[in-house]
Amino acid sequence: MYDLAIIGGGPAALSGAVYAGRKRLDTVLIAKEIGGQLLLTSGIENYLGFESITGAELADKFANQMAQYDIDEIIGEKVVELFKQDYFFKIRTEGDQWSEARAVILASGKRSRTLNVPGERELTGRGVAYCATCDAPLFAGRKVAVIGGGNSAFEAVIDLLPIATEIFLIDIAPHWFADQILIDRIEESPKVKSFQLHRVVEILGERRVSEIVIEPIEGGEIKQFNVQGVFVEIGLVPNSEFVEGLVKMNQYQEIIVDCHARTNVPGLFAAGDVTDVPEKQVIISAGEGAKAALSAYRYLIRQKGQV
Amino acid sequence: MAIFSEHEREHVMETLGELERNVKLIFFTQDFECESCRQSHELLKELADLSDKLSLKVYDFKEDKEIVEKYRIDKIPALAVEGEKDYGIRYFGTPAGYEFAALLENILDVSRGTVELSEETTEELQEIDSLIHIQVFVTPTCPYCPRAVRTAHKLAQANDWIQADMVSATEFPHLANKYDVFSVPKVIINEGIEFEGALPERHFVQHILMAASSRT
Image 1 (tube, rainbow over the protein chains, first blue to last red):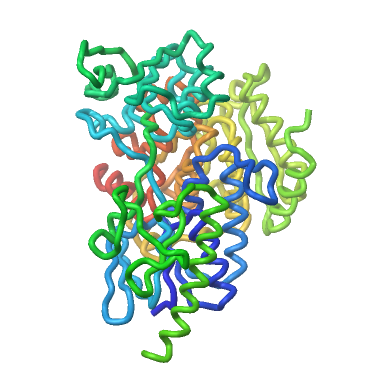
Image 2 (cartoon, rainbow over the protein chains, first blue to last red; image 1 turned 60 degrees about the horizontal axis):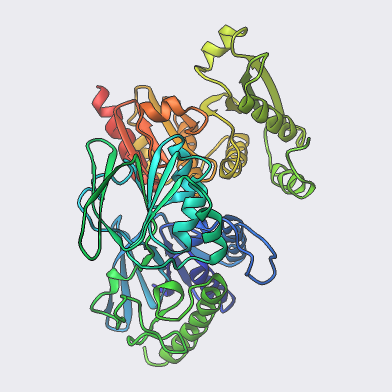
């Protein structure tokens, strides 16, 4: 049995692992991939110590630092179940690997939110995309739709501008939430056609996306456009399903933690984007991960006398 | 103009310092080079200069028919990474962007002559007794793609029946179109089996076994 299991592979998890390693806790890190959302970030200019670095490079540096310590890793596996049994936790991954630990840090981060409209799931990977950085180059000479009004939607449009022939930018809000510097960059382009206060009704296509259907949110004429790609950039949802019913969450399904990174379950800590800590930033997640590891260490020391 | 910055050159040299046995980069281009052939060629020339254990051999896609056939090259730019033998490791298109790191790791594996795979995978691979052709479609800006490429190349190195190709979706748009590549990484095994995403090694192997059993 491990002292500590850390679930996740982003900045909070890796920072937690470094701190746990330094305390010589017998630790396992379980993650779908090392890097988390860092892998989807092209440039980072606000992480202290690095004036400008790509997300992937920073992830590499974090992973290399973690490798200085003796941490077991289960990589490529998503955690699907976690429960407390007596004084310890049991954790099961998608591939049915079980781990046991006296304390756990939940640092499973967030993932792309889906539209939940007909056609979306069936056409994912057939034109419906959630990684603009990855998939934008595949839409050269094609018409596409980008859904959303925040920074990630505008960054997707900017990635697509030199590639796609026409871009429909669709959002339900009355105004953009993106930084003005990004808005300025695309509003001058004749390729971009914006539809604010519109929702996606359906995505159509047989083997691949062929059309998108949208409607004004306050009713009115339905519009249908020929597109070959739909980039969904409408924010993120926490990866917290596997602890539903076990820990307290807020209305956004974020895990509620106190200022010591403790959840309401003794021995269960949480850090990073999966928690209700405001401001989702690499530097904040890294700090929270460190804090969670130190809190877990203190918990384990106290618990030792009782077991 | 140099492709690597001074800093990158140092980093790559340090990595290549771990090379054990000699590794051959066998590159296919043509006399009048296409833009991406020229870029690949430059990249590989600079790379090969950074270690005595790394050599670059260049063949002409049109002229050197026998070698082209031997290495099963049907498009350029193409690269085979060869160690003690030809493991069936291929790159079609420039191994740049995120793929460059995968190429470096691949070169180290080939130099060692062994790859790290789980015991289950090693055991399951022994069941394969017919040709398996894996194509992994990538874009240079895809952070998940190198993992799929690495897994495919490791499997190729571990089993003589397997050939694994990295295929640049942007450099070969007709193939991306043929295989409906709208999301990367996309993996095609023996034309019939396909999946998207960088699956864990064990799941990747299951798809290969499916392809192997559907052939017999």
